[in-house]
Amino acid sequence: MHLDVQDLRNFYYRSALGRAAQASLRGRMLEIWPEAKGQTVVGYGFAAPLLRPYLKDARRVMALMPGPQGVMPWPPGLNNVSALIEETHWPIETGHVDKLVLLHGLETSERAFDLLEECWRVLGPGGRALFIVPNRAGLWARRDRTPFGFGRPYSPGQLETQLRKHQFLPERHLGALYQVPSSKRWWMKSGAAFENIGRRMPTMMAGGAFMVEATKLVYPPKGKVEKSRRPSAVGVMKPAAKPV
Image (cartoon, rainbow, N blue to C red; front, side):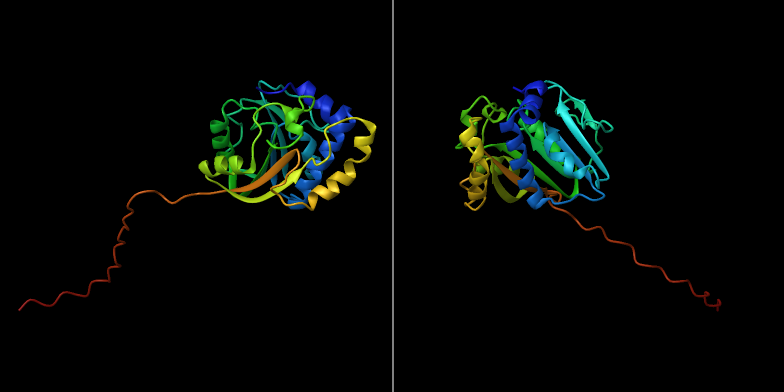
């Protein structure tokens, strides 16, 4: 069950807690992807709040939003780069994406298998994907007042197993959203301190969400492969001997 785009926009752009969540997720993402100069960057689900740092230098930025969720024009004040799509048939050629970000896309999809197949298809050689999902053991997954309280939360092991089944190789794990999911003034003031402490903790003790960076695996053909023999070069024929 996908969330409505209006609810997502109101949370991330019109609430103090949503703006804090946006800053936490974006900050963690920029630690591993500080730039995307000359690259194609695609966000799926509601990844638009994280893509703004790449608008200046990336070759192309696209914010893909699934039909059941709805779409909004983005970014405000600039040429629109968002599109409403069918969640398992993206209008992107195979192997053309350098960086792919999924936020509020995987855990709410009823066709997660097909969605991951599409992610694998569009990712190019050497490309990287960042999957952001609610932490099953975190506080944010237990509060339905935030988008992280909807859909299927994951544990790091569950997500990694799912990715390996679809020919992704998990490379790095990061935690995010260490502050308490409350809009009360005291908790909001303490949010920055909780984030700083949480980033020093082991990845397995992730906060309200965790990120897995993965690369695309391309396996060799299965079965017995026979080498084809190349014909050897034929020399120039010498003049025939004179008949006796």
